Amino acid sequence: LSAEGARLRESAIRRMGALMANAPDLISFAPGYPDESLFPWDAFREITARLLASEDGRAMQYGATRGYRPLVETCVELMRDRGIAADPADVVVTTGSQQGLDLIGRVLCDPGDVILMELPSYVGAISAFQNIGADLVGVPQEADGLDLEALDAVTRRLRADGRAVKALYTVPNFQNPTGLLVGLEKRRALLEWAARADVLIIEDDPYGALYFDDVTRPEETRAIAADADPADARVIYLSSFSKTLVPGLRTAWIAAPPPIAVKIELAKQSVDLCTSPFDQRVVHAACRDGVLARQLPVLRAAYREKRDVMATALESALGAAVRWTMPRGGFFLWVQLPDGLTGDALLARAHARGVIYVAGEPFFVDGRGQEFVRLAFSSASHDRIGEGIRRLAAAINEADRA
Ligand SMILES: Cc1ncc(COP(=O)(O)O)c(C=O)c1O
Image (cartoon, rainbow, N blue to C red):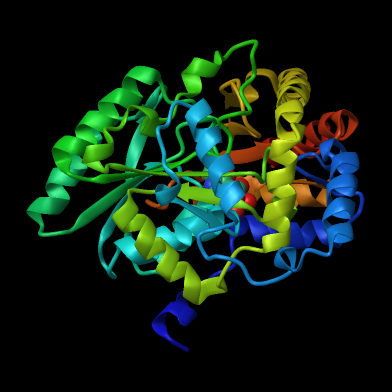
């Protein structure tokens, strides 16, 4: 095995997926899966039937590595709606944002280069960047996002040690795993800091459209990329159709300054030649025909209700025994366990009672986070969320007595 091959480890979330497959009564708050009952089946049936009936060979042929041009233009329009002045030359369609993260890591980093990561951060980004040999250095977060003083101090220290600090990876909208929404002031300050420190920002935004309008105004999800000066080429932006349409079509995109986009395209050539042309056409048609636009308010309302069901269940089953912040959008509730209890230690008891989650530690690049668990409220039904929290509470109470 290569050093990289030897380093490869199964992700904590994927491992939970395997547990789920073997136990039908198991209630899973582990992977951040969207709710399948909300998938737009009728629209997909109609779009795919039309595509197949056309017998247009291009839908089943190899396609451009950059992506299906009409979909590239759709991505540009979606970004324009989010205030980002992108151009088709900036865009690369990717096979999920997960591939985007891998490609970005490959074109930016030599082994040992540093990527700054939020503490905690998305495990898929951690593994993608670690696999290419980047050194991940954590920066603590405050209630409104990264601690800027710490960010600056960490970067200065690394540079004083002669390290190449290439980029900062951030998920400003309803972060996976904390659900945190970075404040608008902080977004502007981050951009200014990045320009001053000459660090690229990798802005990963799969959840921005899934804000809960009881507590979040859409303006509060404004992309960092929206305020970036194109001449400064500071931000690489990623978004995905996984959470807003379906993850199974594996369609997402990157918008990067053109010299970086060209390299990402070349890196993608050797990875998969192109993202599935058929899937891209389905996604494009779903956007063109208004399916995505109709889905969004439905999803926002449905996930907001699920958040309420989980928060109410937690409150009544555990009260002050656990702490969490009410998510303002997205899929996740980030819970701090009672003193002395770790997410890992609790997992066996929780699993025995028929509920699983992801323990906090894999989200922290500095090895901390043992006292947290991530609960995804996105995929389970209301009844299952309530029952799952009762099972979790029983496991916590049992562990507390032990
Ligand atoms: C922050 C973040 N980035 C990227 C991804 C990967 O998404 P995709 O399905 O587009 O590969 C996820 C999926 O959970 C995510 O939460």
